[in-house]
Amino acid sequence: MKNIMKSIKITLALCLFLGVFYVLVLWVFARVVGPNSGNAEVITVDGRVVGAANVGQAFTKDIYFWGRPSHAGSGYEANSSSGSNKGPTNEAYLAEVEARIDTFLVHHPYLSRKEVPAEMVTASASGLDPHITPACAYVQVKRVADARGMTEAAVKAIVDQSVEKPLLGFLGTEKVNVLKLNVALDQHQ
Image 1 (tube, rainbow, N blue to C red):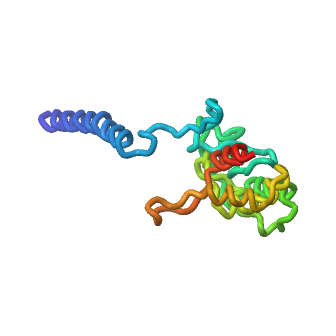
Image 2 (image 1 turned 180 degrees about the vertical axis):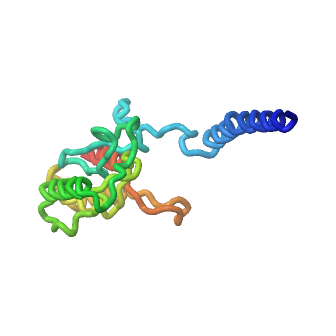
């Protein structure tokens, strides 16, 4: 009986520590050290919120850069965030990727099938990824420039300005936030 009481006390102490104290420490850390005081970074245009910078959005018009496909519901829905859990030998998954490649090539006829970046036809693990690599953005420059009536050099310059460098210069990879890039394009015109 004595051991049971000790076990209950230890369990309650750990529940209190991990359920309250640990969460409180993480919250304070995010508020003090985290970007944007631990809050989501929202993008506003003319005083109107157009999206969160840390959640992808579905862009399908040729005047915009496209992000990675989402497997979350009908597109970037946080309440159904997940990967497809389909392996690279799954027939349904392969058919889905082939259909995405075909769609990508319709809008990018200047590319060959092997030049389509894998990142542009496969969803991220969360299905909510707001970033693409600079290489994926550069592949889309010609389409966006033609659709907007801009020069490729002007669009490429906006992409160059939108490339986010790795944290501290070496943690992570270069990336481009698709929403921020598209807002920058709209503001340029």
